[in-house]
Length: 126
Image (cartoon, rainbow, N blue to C red; front, side):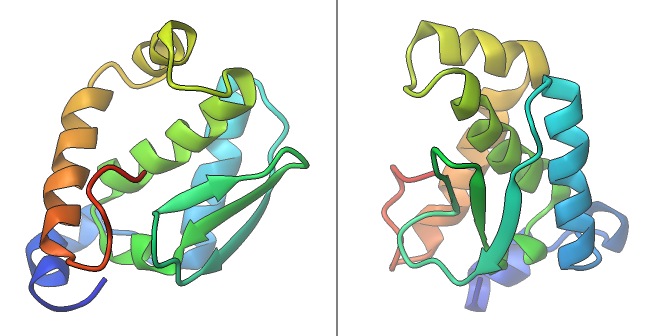
């Protein structure tokens, strides 16, 4: 993330990711909690979304997630891992989201607010 959005997103050091390895650890942690196989994790700059997961078990995360608060990064991670269980955003998907992150809608809104500050990313992408 760049510019004002990065500065606004940065909270206390304890609430930010230390590095890419901590982000990868969070993926393994959440995969175990959700009961899915931990995917291969790749970080790279993504222009249109924060993350994507393939059908073959490859999770790609935007490198900019390192600079957002952990609670927002966890939302992105859980969102993508739940897609292993429910491929669309229907009732089953939402039920899993509520089960694993009861405040997921608040986190999603915070992320959307952050996204609207980034002119290059549409606010409907996760």
